[in-house]
Image (cartoon, rainbow, N blue to C red; front, top):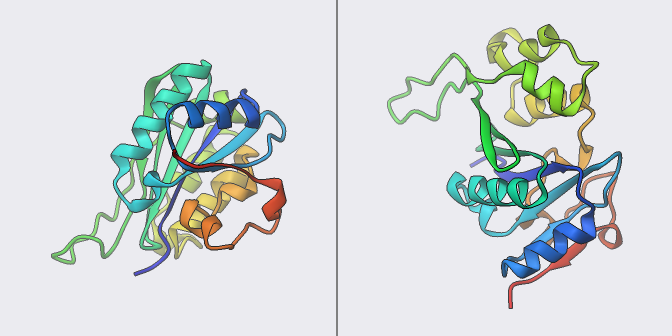
Length: 193
């Protein structure tokens, strides 16, 4: 099994406010520092592969804070998915091409969903539709995206999202693995009671 992780990036609310709301919900999570109005949440139950927990939390936080939320999940280094919320409403979903996750070996060679205009509007108005389409919809064999994390990294770089959202979920942080741009003392943590 390859790398699997999930996290949510919020635009607007501050890390301490997000941490407090996660505590009010009785969740265990790490919260990155807020930089350029962006904060990443790594929630324990979201990291287990079931996207329902991740999307429910993204919807809740987006609605509570009245902000954009981008929930991202990679599965087995191969599949990148995202769910984009604004004010608690799901605006967009996306799944990257995958070659081998289908049990019959008939992977989906085409991506599904993805609205570049919304990503640009909510996160980086300087990013062009074409640049975002190139990242989201380029088949793996035609791009340098041999892993889902590579596609995620390119999207993060283009949209100006936190680098700490690439390649890390709750389990990584909990085991002492941290993004290059973060140290343990940079992260806030709340544990369910």
